[in-house]
Image 1 (cartoon, rainbow, N blue to C red):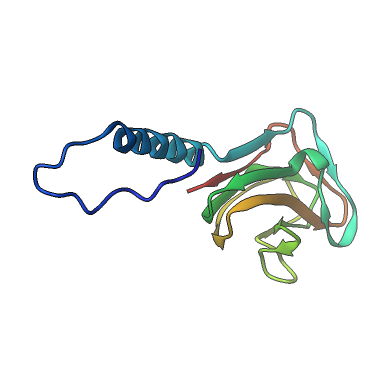
Image 2: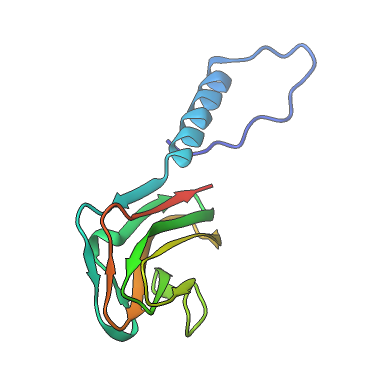
Length: 152
């Protein structure tokens, strides 16, 4: 079902028809569908972030795809990173979101809790792929890290 522009030209005394009520019902279903545009992954085992001087995908399980109605999307990551220094970023449909050198988050050489929430604004309606990427020297991402995206 698709969104139907609601009726706004009501006349005084006009009765609500079955078609009017069906349009309202279909719009509620569409709003619920949009609200559920979410994807998430929680790591089960430790992951080695590939050693690289450029940003590369951390793991294919951390590539998330959602289909949006168009608008803004929240991207969130949290986890423990060991043996930095490291840089973490998110790529959306081939475009990295953070600073060219540091990404969205960077840190030092020891165990470090890493987290960020980033809003990607004005995405077009359709399918979008979000990839968690890293750049580092020899870093491990501990199990139970979580990466998610949600249309808002």
